[in-house]
Structure formats: C-alpha cells, structure tokens
Image (cartoon, rainbow, N blue to C red; front, top):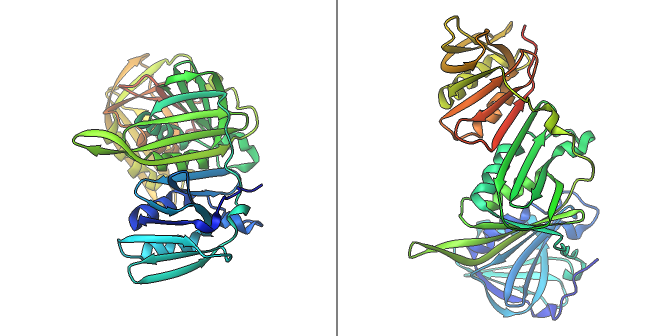
Amino acid sequence: MATKTAAAEGLKAVSPRKELFEGIQTVGKAVATRSSLPILTHVRIAAQGGKVSLMATDLEMWMEHTLAGAAIKGEGAATAPARNFTELLAAMPDADVEFSLEDDTHALRLRCNRANYKLLGLSADEFPLLPQVKEESRFVVDRATLREAIKQTLFATSSDETRAILTGVLVVFQGDSLRLVATDTHRLAVRDCPVKDGSGSASAIVPARAMNELLRILGSEDGDAVVTLSGNQIQFQIEHMTKQADELIPSGSKTMLISRLIDGQFPNYERVIPAQATKTLTIEREPFVQAVKRAAIVARDSANRVVLRSTDDGDRLTITAESGSVGNAYEEVEMAREGDNSPVEIAFNAKYLSDVLNVLDSEGLHIELTEPLRPGLVRPTDDADYLCVLMPMQVV
C-alpha cells in the first residue's frame, strides 16, 4: 500500500517557516505514536500538481494540509520523522525554509538563513495511500455551526473502550438537517443544526479523537466545511479563509481529515429523553455555573454529588454538597419555575452538570424535571436545537 511518486528525486520547495510549522502541527496529530511500521511515525511532504502538501496517518485517521505560500522548484515527495521535523521548525527563525530531497538517501534537506540540516527519512513510496472516499452522502455545513455542535456533544462521549460505539459521536444526516449525538450512559447530548447542498442520507459513528481533531482544525475562522460519507469512512474538507478589504476570500490553504468509522449499532437514545416535564426551572446561567463550580470542590470527596433543592418560597434553588473529610457547601441562585409546585429535590454528578453548563453560551437555561430518580433535562433558554439529559444520583 504505497503512494507512487514520480520524479521523487526532484522535490524542492520554499515555504515561510511559520506556515510550514503550522502545517506540520496540523497534520501531526494523525502521526502514530507507537507503531510496528516506522513510516507511520513520519510526515510525508510533497510538491505535486502545483501544490505543496503535508500528510500524516496512523491508518485510523489521515490528515492532509496544503500550504498556501509555498513556491515549488521541483516536484516530488519525501518523508521525515514527525517529532524531529516539528521540533526543528519550532526552533528556526521566522524566515523562508527551503526543503529538498537528497539524492538516493531519502533524507530531507532543510535550509533556513545560515542553518542547514539533513533529516533521515524513509522512501515516500512506503507511505500509505490517502483513501479515496466515494461520495455516497455529502453535505456542506457552516463551520461556526459545526464547531458549536461538536463542542456541545463531544464531552458526553465515553472513554470505555469495551463499549466502542459509545466512544464516538453519532452523526445523522438527512435532507437539510444534521444531528450529532453522544452518550456515555450517564449523560446524553443531542444537537441539531442545518446543512446546505446535501445529497443522500447517512448515519455514522465518528471516533471522538477524530471529532476532537476536527474541532481543532475548524479553528475560529468563518466559512464552510464539506463532509462526505462512504462505507466505513468520513471525510471533512476545510478551505481556510483570509480577510482582504473586509471581505473573506480563500487563502489557498486547505485541510482534509479522513477517519475510519466505528462499526456497530448506536443505542436507542431517544427513549431516554423525557417526553414531558412536570416542572421546569429557569435559571440565569453564569451564577449557576459558578455556584456548581464551587460546590464541586466539596463534592469531589462524596462521589461528586451535588443536590439541588427549592427553597420554601419556591423562588430560589439551593446547591449543596457534603463530605465527611472536607466539609459542606451551600449555594443559592434565583429561579423561576413552571409546572407543579411540589418541592424540587434531585442530585446530579457535579462534573457532568458542569460539563454541560460550560458548553452553553446562553444567558439562561431550563432544567426540566419529572421525578427525583428520573433523568433531568438541560436546555439553553434561547436554543431549541440542543438538549442534554443527565441521569440523577441518589439523594443521601
């Protein structure tokens, strides 16, 4: 499985150090940290078809980044150890870096000002092929929308490898809508968002690692992401933008991430979403975030349990935690309530509660409840497209 490189001995190009370094950092997250195949610890750098690109893979995830400011003097490809390449570029001055392939040695020659380095590489022909993802389903989504959707679901994935299907984010695409879902059985996060230029439909479980790297390369730029699904793979294409005269235009730099999907059937998550609340609490988000954060310091020694209770007048919500080795915590926040007037008393894991509160950016939030030992539901007050279900703990 190799990429055949025409005229490999001809590789020669020049790039600004900063852009080359940022490109290596981008694809470096796909480099294998431990592998029986030495080539997977390398980065492939190629000058072909009028573009300079960097690529890395661990055979589960591939990342390719195209440099915008590179000038090609000769076409070809080479590889270099990712760690050494990254550290060397980090230490070089901000000037142009010339890189070329040494004849017959597979070594990459780097020149920057008066610095001259040779990195021992492997044959570029040994580097694994970039998968060709057939376009069975495809859609375009606003990057800011996708960025928020990933942030609001990724935290709920599981780290338990014995249940692999829960270690990823379920991506469901149909028509003009996209849904992201994640659960570790203790909490469930669901986010709906619009898409455009969609074709086909698909449901796939994307590894959390790939989603985390996608979140990183989405950055803070505006623009779109093109998503393609086929068989057991998903591909994300990002065209980076630059501002010119108050207008966003393509910079010439692109990043592509391809990931294998997790095989298996995602659980029927919809059955755990409470159908209808008997009471709804409306709370200002920031004071509640800070109160839970402080109470969690005490809760750490008591199974991370925080208890929410309504005050006698029903206008405030108390947040308490107790620990035999630390002490106790008591906080109050104002609230409005709808539904039945029975007292509120429910316990949640402080970390799980904090996780969802921290991915909301609304001024207020709703907590929808039914019974003390039934799941609670958290929603932002200004966004009907997001919800998080939290399993309760026993009140003690």
